[in-house]
Image (cartoon, rainbow, N blue to C red; front, side, top):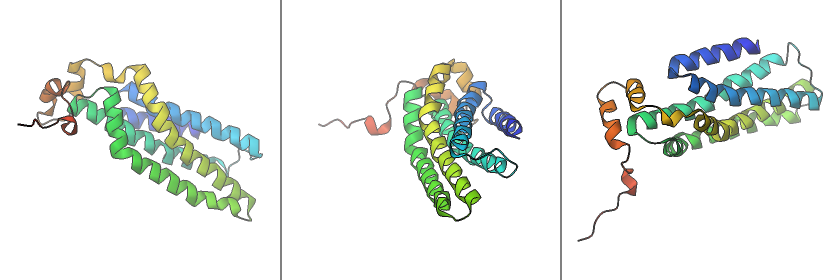
Length: 191
């Protein structure tokens, strides 16, 4: 079940981003969180059963969203504005980071209340889901950009970036804007 989930997520990420680097940047943090979730299950004495596996699949399905949100915004900023990886990640966090963290914290608090349930299964699943939601967003914020840097996501040839840029002429301006400062950083001259 987990193999099919990761295979389908990998395929859909590749179809969306058309990059094996994007697939690795999104999938690796997700896989590490799943491994840590299995370790937490062993620590809490929760067995891998027919009832617990769908809960892990749910955590994976929700957790992948954070990585996709951030990577998509980074790719957009690099292609449209010619930003380097550092600037693109800053813009991605500025535009999508707050929403990702807010969603993860809200969902973690919501399912975390299940830990107080009298039903042991519900309490265990609340702990697992809260853990997966929180750690997935941390993986998307900290591990995804590190992997992108290590894989050289921002160092592609300009021709490759122009091929992936959205139609409508915006790809023609990426070379000119590569060294341009953001509008907020430009200071008016005093006369």
